Length: 482
Image (cartoon, rainbow, N blue to C red):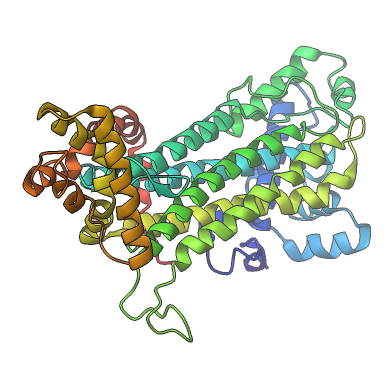
């Protein structure tokens, strides 16, 4: 039966989300975590003096954390319509000596909410690793092309040149910001711990005869056993941990979607310009009707999944805002879908990003030709200064340059001919410049400012410390076949 529970069934599961993320949100991982929490609870209660719990009982519970009798739990749930009590019953069938003390003092949210936190922590850790993998590939790309001048665009119109590598640092920098958000969420994540039915710990006050120090010790022991700092338990709650936690986490995942969509959109536009494109296999077909097409399908898929993830943020936001008093159950069905799908979407996006960033293709001759077609306009001020040095009038030359630029623009737009602004200036005696002197001003590398140095500094000062601190992430995430 366990094989039926080892994956999370989702639209993303069929192809793009990794097996690892699917398992994190699977029933099997959830119910094994429930059992680990029941073991931790029993052990902590025993250590704090509950004499009806023995080491033999705890050992029996530990022996059956992974061999879950799903058939028994399913049959019981069909009868009693309660998932937690069905699994308590099934666990008790395998652990007859400990059956009477499983879930002692706890409410359903003890296993439900604490498991949600633990599962989301696993998901965030996987997202963190893959983000670093993408950053490593973008960083290598940026350094490889740090010196290659290209046209930069504002309003999607030609602006001052940059370099191909510097543009890649813009993509990477936004992902670095996302990485910081993921790390913040991991660093501040806390367990619900033992809080009881409405968060007052009344049942545990009864169990421990009002000894609050023992209750706090149980909380700390459970946190430690589940891999948290002993004090990493939320200070107050109703029945559940605040659903704002889910909203914070999904917002962090949606931030990744924003950055990846921006990257993918830029690559799609550059593919249209024929300057750069995503990997395209030898036998790949771009269109059923147009054999010549090279559609950027991977980047389109990144954009599509990113849009889904950004919209998914609304789910936990509304859930957090509509929790009545200590808790209402209308969050449950939505939360189970929204959070799992959000993580799977983020995972799918990063899997595709790993593939695309590993095989970005640059066409240097196209990059340069597109830049050279616009460079005479951008070199106007340099040309004007050179002409002034030869005795020209700055104000008169400025006007003549404007007229030549307008005329050259018409030549390009209306006649479809190359930019002839340099030839027009050479033919104008007011400038006193030869065409060779004008061409000497049209060196793209002279127009990129500090772009190469900025790229190097970004890699050394921002990316390298991340890579040094996370060597395992670099080793684990090679490009995926998507």
